[in-house]
View 1 (cartoon, rainbow, N blue to C red):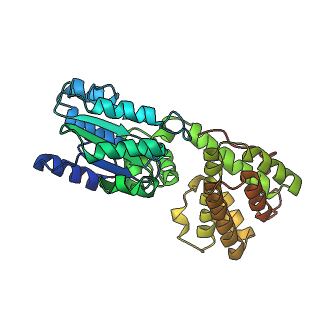
View 2 (view 1 turned 180 degrees about the vertical axis):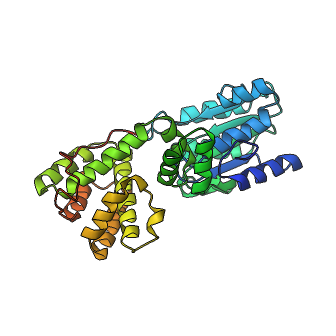
View 3 (view 1 turned 90 degrees about the horizontal axis):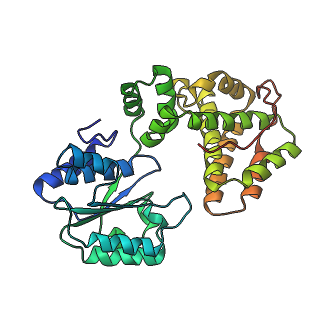
Length: 338
């Protein structure tokens, strides 16, 4: 962890800190990267560096209650940020700072801003107030108008190294075995790792998703279609999380079968015995086919195809294995929210 308290993005902290020291910090920033990789944490750290004159002000920034920090984000994963919210934010940004030299607006999940809202942002970027700074957060730059992207200082955050995530968890008192598992499952998403370490819900949901897959491997077509119908009615994010959990499992099976990296790199290390059984029961071509089919289904869902039909096609591609290999799970059920 660096002096800003940001895990795994030392290079980004150095770049921003150096710009502050030289008086060359841009007024408009765009932080992009995978979900839960630390984009909002970095935005908050930058705001704390600019607004946190003392312990009180730093605490207010951390709580997003500082009078010179303006923060807008959707209330749910799929809800758009309306133009009225953006106009209100941008108007507040034009006012003089209350306690510091800066007034900072952060728009989290900026890709969910409506087109009219993005046009309003563009006008502010073209003629910013001298004391104003705006930070946009999005999964990738293609999600925003090219004219917005061109006016921002772009920082593309990558997943943190697994060892950095594990060390951060250990420093917070997480047991070694649990920290190692969470770090690998996080795939460098430090935000997800910290939530999983603090709350068992994420790991429980992942366990349910793997249990569902076990049951489906020995299920007949009727039960597979029933599962596709149930899961297809879930929120898109929950469907994606289920398929991502399965995809990671199949990647581990490929490793165990010698098709990919060595077995000591298993992500689902707590499922080593079942993974070994699957690697013995399936051919390399079958595992490769399952990897392709699961990844393809995730892409289809991103393109808003009919979820139930896409899931039915995927589930019919699952091999039929005896219940012993599937660990005799009684019945599949869609996983709860993580």
